Image (cartoon, rainbow, N blue to C red):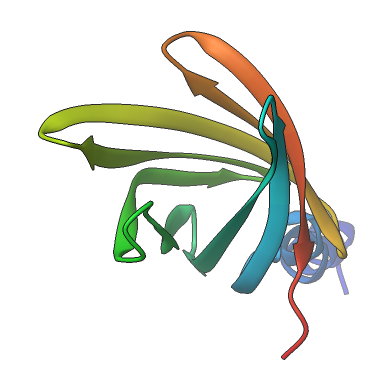
Length: 120
């Protein structure tokens, strides 16, 4: 085999190992003045596109939007309707096999939390 072909084969085999494995259900909580608030997401990766959902305050499923995957980094937005007043929360996270370290931004105020892979 030529050296160039060997390098190409190694890249084809190894590159997927660097991609984030986010498929499935993830759960965590966000600390706040009134105590911890549980938060759950379901994610599905399709190449560099991230889709999924979370649960709104009313218990209804809310889809994520603008989801992107860049290696182990994910970004997405969730739009909520709070009594007729829409607002958007932007999220970014770093994925590891057992957790996602998340940062959210709500009205330009950042908050951090950790999601753990939910047991099937």
